Length: 263
Image (cartoon, rainbow, N blue to C red; front, top):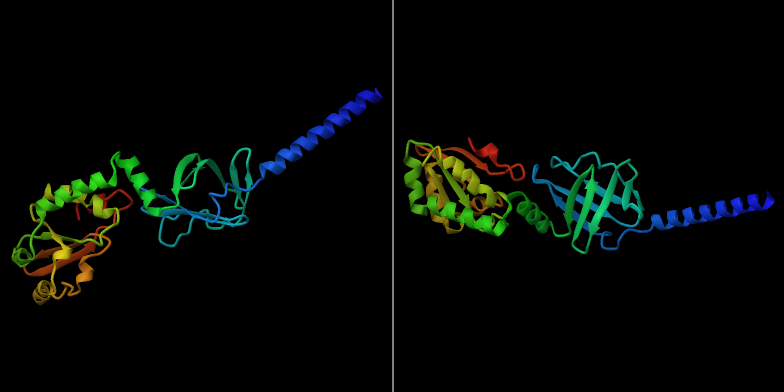
């Protein structure tokens, strides 16, 4: 009986040692590729970036729905990592599970949803764009260029369009237009021209100071600064009867531009 009791004690000690070793190794540091880098995931529904940053002791993780970056993860400040199940357990009660990682891409499971993060912010948009549209941004850009060429006008025709009674939309875009809206504008154009033929495009790079001064004399709502027609978003002027009726930028909700279909 004594031998049996000793055997049970020895086995119990061994089990405790094994569990302790597994626990220690389970809380081993994260992959070095993950640490001390910002990781970006583009949310195609909102147009905002989820941003993750970790070092050996602390983290910051933002999943914003607005510009103030406030969300349910804002108060998470530290974490522990379990190498066995690959869980990053946050001090705010949330858990991020690593599905895969390499030097450029990190895939996490968050609330049963699998999200891909990239160190390069542009690669994050490219990945989500290709996944959503099943086409690369460059191929989609070709479609947009074709749509713009159909409605393109020269500078000297702007004055003529402004004088018309019909409401006309003039889209100004140049080489500074690099946001995703600059690709998706073709979708908006398709909807607009199905209701009206008075849709036009001006390449902002071709504008001159002389053209803008002439337009400003007609209506001072026309800005005289060239840079304000060559923004990171498409700029739209609605005109009629020698007046500027409205001015706005195309800013979609992620990949959804339907708010502008009837604008």
